[in-house]
Image (tube, rainbow, N blue to C red; front, side):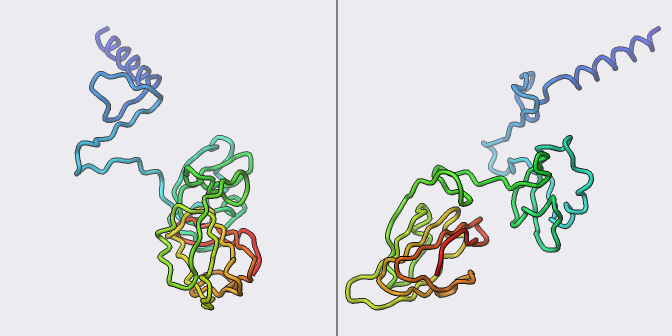
Length: 219
């Protein structure tokens, strides 16, 4: 009888844990406010706060194509490497970063970077935050990280038409470069197939922090 009572108590306890909300590092005896609540230790400089989701390469994830279905909708992973051949489900994985599985499209979808501006992937709303850049001098592009529309100009009497191209880490998100310097502009060190921009033309670019993508425009 005693053994039966202990077994019943253990079963009830396990069932309670299964149905309860779970807290990690929460205040003792405090009830978690959601299904899973994870509290960090912000006052302890030596503690590495954060949550690590599974880290995997695109090739490794592609090998798992058949095991992802509607039950895995919303699954989150972090891609560490994009070398190798993609598959239909991993076709949209074009850079390292966070991706979630979208069962309605049968593809892994990038988690877009947060922004107070409309730094998008080339569609949707766009709020210009513009400035001008003098092409007659070497430009420190990190000074323009908060701008998404840059008009390229030349001072009166200056004929220089070469400009150093910004690195992908200098300006992250959507960037429009408009040539208003009165002449053909040549980009020095451009990672794009186009290295020239005619007067009056513009380029619509997108940077994920590691690579530039040409969204639209003409040289």
